Length: 163
Image 1 (spheres, rainbow, N blue to C red):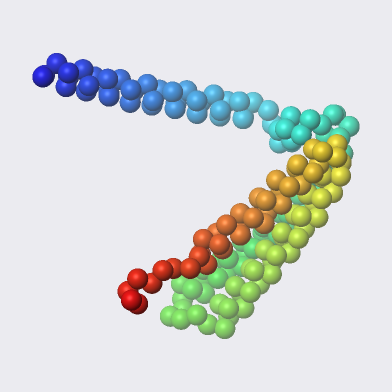
Image 2 (image 1 turned 30 degrees about the vertical axis):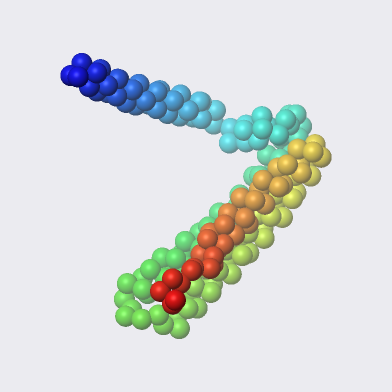
């Protein structure tokens, strides 16, 4: 009786050790692989089978879009700092808090619109099938990720206590 229990314990500890070692090696490999190339668009070329001319066209679009993206991020971050400061010093939701929340919402909507226009432009620089696939994925990431959160928050809750 004692021997099977000891064997089971040794097996469990060995399995855990192998799992931890594999996870660390995998993490190390992924980090080294991801950090080897400082070209942030290399993945795009590989994933969407782009030739060097297409990649350079997309690189130009990407570099042209960065200032706009950075500007939206900075504006949103500024408003969020302002909001945190107001909330830290307020005992209730004031008209000023509501105004800043509306500004943040508006900036995010403008940012998403700009992103979608940029993704559309990038998709046109790709082979047609790859461009459609790229655009579909970017739209999903830009819009549907928010829809999933909203859907989760608006699912009907069954009120069992009402019966």
